[in-house]
Image (cartoon, rainbow, N blue to C red; front, side, top):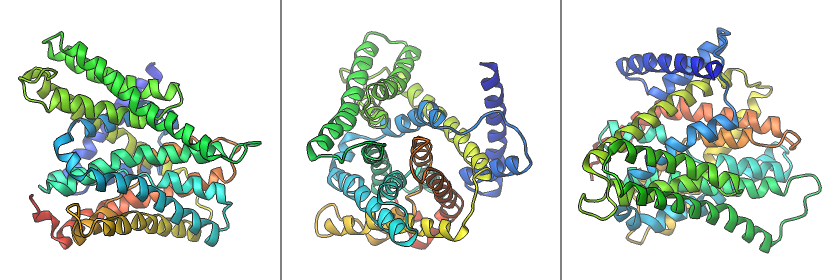
Length: 402
């Protein structure tokens, strides 16, 4: 325990120093963390903690997903739900298809490996840009769409990735439509069901206490318990935690005090603060670890990496612009500036790396997939992250307030 706790506390202390310096320099916090991680790795400093699939899935993702989910009001989400679902489902499929087609055509990847990478890189992680939206005062619809789409498309991308990888195993038979449907129901539907079940039990238990500490502890059980339980039965932990967060957020945290399942006034305030802090800590650790891992990632072909980054951007464009065009003449239409920022703000992050790291050791093109995933994430954080604020100004979105 001490072997892990000590280095983690040291990293967290370093992250706080980076946060202070980054704010003074008006540098995006996540960019400062990645650069610090790169510097530590290049200086050959052994921090004692490494970025693994288990660290991301079991420690990092639940607080990030839950914190975002509990803050989304259902009354606002349902107004744009058709658009959000289209972006998170059809958009993910289009992104994965464009990336996979490019990898097979331009770099000669086998179709299965290319599609697996296309699926994992379709998962957006715009947490850093959402923080920027909050800091610059951009509120309303754009932020809601970005947050909601990211939460749902994480689960959809993970589901698609799981289905593709299952068909790549040695001796695996070609998937049948019935088999795909069954897996989709287990992974996707099972994840949502577990999340709603665990959150429902937590809400019922919270109604039996007026202690804000117990209420907060129950939200922690719901966040991590739903994730771990879903993963144990082969369902999607991502969708489970998102479902749990949406249910607990709307029934317990965002509800009026007189509502039946609402937490106490002190509990609601404490829960929000607790999860904001938890997400901040998780974000701090993961971006430092990303920087450390990037320095250790081999880059044999810079040209191939440039192609992969271009394909990731093209895939995101295919996810945003055609889907947005489908709603152009409806009440869910979004403006061109919003579309442009949805494209540029579709950063890749922790989930894409976790999925890449979870590829079986014998999977074809596993090393190439890892290098490509780290390259895309590095570009997302360092280039797109640094230019997000100028992009907001250029598009006139820093003055948006509705």
